[in-house]
Length: 135
Image 1 (tube, rainbow, N blue to C red):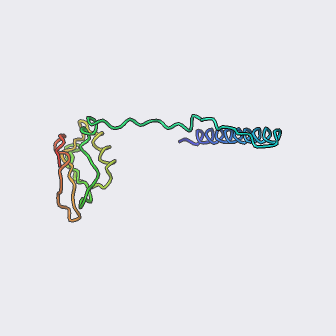
Image 2 (image 1 turned 90 degrees about the vertical axis):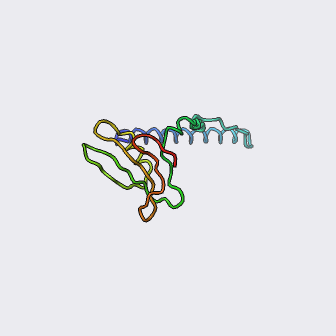
Image 3 (image 1 turned 30 degrees about the vertical axis):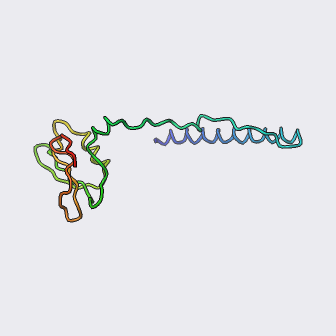
């Protein structure tokens, strides 16, 4: 978030807080007028509502060949071609692999993603030449 946006957001949040304080004062004045607490019911606010997340469909889950590391797996070994050279890297973050897969094009092609154990031995192949392989 840019600093000018942050300043504007902070100003709006302060304004919101002032309005909540004002509501509390008005409710207190009503209770004082009646000589007893008035049973105000809290109105639902838009910020109370949570956006319902759509569950992932089986089709979209089937298209994603990646999965979290399991059991003795400690890393992902990725082999890809970039600008005519083959590069091999190890990663422990699945999000980095998703970014790499999404970045494929004419100058970058992922050829292999496999999981490895602590000794560096292959445990499972997740992607091979852009086709998902079941582990």
